[in-house]
Each structure stands twice: as C-alpha cells, then as structure tokens.
Image 1 (cartoon, rainbow, N blue to C red):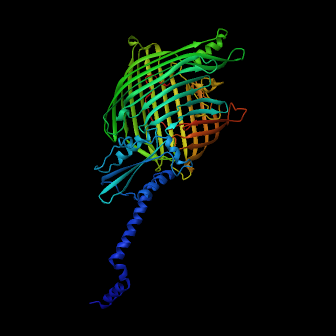
Image 2: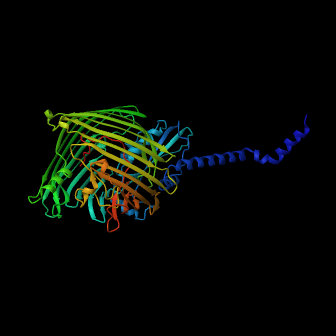
Image 3: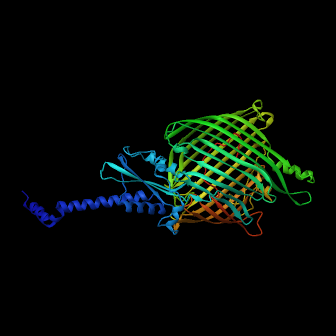
Length: 609
C-alpha cells in the first residue's frame, strides 16, 4: 500500500476542504452559469443596434427578467406585450405630449402574432411576425425576445413595439438649389383610437400644380387580415387656379402575412388625368414650355395560390387593363422642327391593353436581419437566396386593345449574405411584347447591389443599374439627375429646364456611397454619407456619355415619427455640364437608390402614377 500517496490525498483534503463543501460548490456553479448566461445574452443582443439594445435592457430591468439563451425546443408559457409610447424618458420632448397620440391597442398587436401560448418556440414564426409588424406604418421599433421562465422547460416571449407619432404630416419633399420641386403633405390621424385606421387630407405641390384631396386606409379592415385604401384629389394650376385634372386610387385584398399561407388576392384601380410640361428651346433660341395632356387608367384583379414554406412556389392568374392617352397641345406659333422634336422625344404614344395573365414565382423565405443598411438604428429584413419570376399575358384588338400581342416578363435574382451583416444581390429582368405591325416593346434591366458588412463605423454601398429599351414603340424614356442617382446635376423631370440631355430610352448608373453607422443624439438616429455617382442616358447605347458627381450627405431618422430616413445631400459635378453654382443641394426622404426586390410591373412596362 502506498502510504505516501494516502498522505498526499489527506493533506490535499485538509488544505482544500473549504472548496469541497456543497455550499461553496453551489456558489461556484451558480457563478459559472451566470457568466455563461451573460455571455449568451451579450451574443443575443449583438444582433440589435445600440438604440434597440437600450430599449431591450430597459424593459428587462423594469420587469426583472433575463434573456433566455437557449429557447429552442421549449414551450411558450406566456407572451407579454410591451407597447412603448412615442415619447419616453429617452426623448427630450416632455411625455405629456403623448396625450395627442393614440397608442396602438393591445388587441391590434396581438392579432398580428403568428405564435401563441402553449406552442413550441418557433423562431421562423417569430421572425415572420416581426417582419409583418415592421411593415405597418404606425410602428417603428419591433423587438421580440425570449426571456427565462421559472420552469426551465418553458420560455416566455417579450414583444416590444414602439409607436410612431400618429397625428402627423406624413410628408415627402424634394428641394435643392433649384428651390422646392416637389412637396407632398398628408396630415393624418394614422392610429385612430389605437386601431391603425388612417384618415387624412392630402396636399401635393409640383412646379406648376397643386392638389388637395383625402386618403382613407386600413391594413386590417374590421379586425380581419384584409387591407383597404381609397384616395384621390383634383389638380389645380398654381398660376391660374383653374382645374387641370385629378387622380385617385382604390385597393382591396388579402395580402401575404404568413410563410405557409396558401391563398392571397387583390383588386386595384387607379387613374391620373393631368397636364405634363416640358421646356424646350425653339428655332429662335427662346425657351418654350410645351404641354401634353395625359390620361392614365389602370385596373388589376389577381389571385395567387402558393405552396411551401421555406421554398415558396406561387401560381397567380388574373387580368389587367391599362389605358394611356397622351394628347399634345402645341402653340400655333411653334416652328415645325421644335414641334417634331417634342412629339418624338417627350410625348409617349397612346396605348390600351386588356390583358389576362398567368404568373409563376419561386423564392426562398430566408432573411438577413441587420441594421444601418437602408434605415438607421432599427432592424431590417433582407430576403436571401434565389428568386425567379415568369409571367405570360396577351392582348387583342378584338377585345379593345390597340395592339395584338403576346407579352412575357422573365426575371431572376440571387441574394447572398456577406460576412454576417453584408449582402450581395444580382438581378436581371426582361420584359417583352411581340405585337402586330412591329409595334414591339422590350426592356432589359440588370442590377448589382453590394452592401459591405458593418465595419464598426459604417458600410460601403455599391450599386449598378443598366436599363436598355431595345424595342421602344411606346417612346418611353428614363431620367437621371436631381436627388436620385446623379446628384449634383439638374433634375431630369418633365418640367425641368435642360431635361432632354438627362433623358433617354437607355440608362446606365453606377453609385458608391459610404454610410456611417447611426449615432443616438437625443434619441434621433443620425449618420453621415460620402458618395460618388456616375451615370448616362441616351436613345442609343452607343451614344452614352457619362457624367460624374460626388458629395456629402446627412442622414436622420426619428423612430418616434417614421422608419424612413430623412436625407440631405450636397453634390457637385466632376465632369461635363458643370453648374456655375458649383453644385446642388437636395432634401428628400429615403435613400438615393433604395434596395429593391425583383418584381413584375403591370402588363406594359413602366406603369406608374
């Protein structure tokens, strides 16, 4: 028997006996579990912005709750809804002003939940719920976090939502060195009695017209999942006050609200009746404002049947009706050459289509959750993976259309995650109408979007766009300049001077922008941007002549009022057509080149109001 070994063990036991006591071991294990839990909690919070982390920590501390690091496989025991007021202790505005805002009702949030007590924890259902809530314009921050339950086999869910100010202007504007070029005001109560009902007036101001109307909308009519909207307004001339037309829109249907939803459908109708103005120099060199009368009517009925959840396959069918009537109003003293140039370059052809269609769409329901991409300080959802769309439709003169044609829209895109929080998306889409008498219309569009991972202090965004109208019977054109893809140059709007040099059947644009991360300043999310724009338009790809500009920008987002970024940019030309003022200043809502998904336009390409 090894007496020396026995003595060593005895000696160790005497010296370290306090460490072997059950109470000390329990304390040690409790501390270890707490450390691991804190590490897991930090990892969970890392997916949120600094602003969102502040909201989560505050609610957890107030309720004495801890994050659940391993919720998978556990049953949901309780769901607690936390509806944050627009103004709280994080905001500099006194909380008393919340009396002028209708807080979203408990039941309005509850009906959006795609999970319930007693069910197993389902991260995909939670993510889909969060996406649905973020799509509601009355809500800014949406945070759904798992928290510990007294029963280790169960988990609780904390659903945190923050309202936006409901009594609000709902505005949009474009202004710059040329003055105010566009203003839209929609003073509304967007959360009537906390039900998300929208009722308000609309005011729209352009360079030459103004319009005063109304808008009514509800995303969940009468507590159902149906949506509805109606809006409209007469249009008046700013100088004379005389009526120049009107516009309106009606929408109703059942939207997509769950990954595995089998059926959705909708009805939409819209019209615009107005005057469009262009500036051109006549044969004597005098600037003339030339006008054409535009009528646009659009109706669409669609029904979609979908299968699958993770890999979604959808079959749609329906009918579209579209009527475009463009009538020039030429002055009697206008010379023939200027009149011909105006008709050829600025007045689209009239066209009517009545088109039954079928469509197949395949895509994946995988998403990247990130922040500081398009918005500031709030979660954003970017769809990942492949997406394919194929649409076939037809029209016949015998049924009231102006052309006999077969049309197709075929498109594909693929989106990849890059480095955890970055994303790369490539898209190509071709719209083609083969019509009688060679009245064809064809547009090829390709784009590439690269958003770098968060670099700690910001992101680099690269975006390229090619639009080639290789068949253009309808004489459709695109424009660059203004507050969009070619900042620093004059806006290529129909009413802008010199716009013809910035408009063409084809366009190419390349944009690079570094956007800083959002910084919390009195609960406003503030960021900066530096950009370089390059683009060209022409009626032939061989005639493309690129212009370049660069500049600086300010980005501000107020989560109390909206999820959309308010943008102020100053751009200056680096090549041809330099402005004697040295640059142009623009204020607008949303990013200059927003992140868009592959989609199908109405039967004729480029339909819009």
